[in-house]
Image (cartoon, rainbow over all chains, first blue to last red; front, top):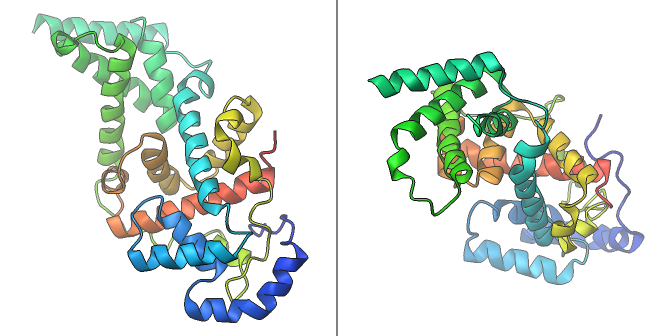
Length: 114
Length: 182
């Protein structure tokens, strides 16, 4: 399956505008793809002043990309929530066998003696 | 041993390996046993134990991937960067990037209370290739900085940056394709 093939196309106004503007934006290094990559990269590192400026310019004029930074932040928060309750939910039914508990107890006792 | 099951579940949810999880719990309790006099009671005992276990899990990843490898060329099954399908050759969107993610930008806290959505997030994480998932989990769930996560996952720092951005792209796409509207 091709990634993204099931998603709807962007609004018609965006497509019409990009038909004219996208070669220029690409040449200036401020295309939607550039903005998407910068939003993604700023989750791991501080952008340079130039990158930050290019991103701000793009987000000012592109309504469809404007939510990208908030979406990346939101995704991070959501994933952190997943991590916090992961051990209570995803493995909710998992538990150590009595045999393993006995082995660990024995191991701790033997360390205690030493 | 009252905390052992909770520790085991925590380890299992991170490393998906029953035997290794058991060993990590044993190591964790062993360290805790030796250092119990350093436990000052400012946090709960379970929080203290989970803290020790987190270090053990990072050590586990570090030991199991001793040689840093350059994984930056990792692509999808077809050999393409998944992002190529999202943009035209001029870098304009081919798909609506906000589809299914509107609420993510507005109220992630509200989404977290919805079990079905959290289950999808976990499913999407599980669908990441092993190396991506390990690195992504260390960075996003365990909250390590990029350098530490790369070291623990056994990838070079340069590769880690690429792999992390790729993991986020895949996560976004997976969430969009499955829809996370409440």
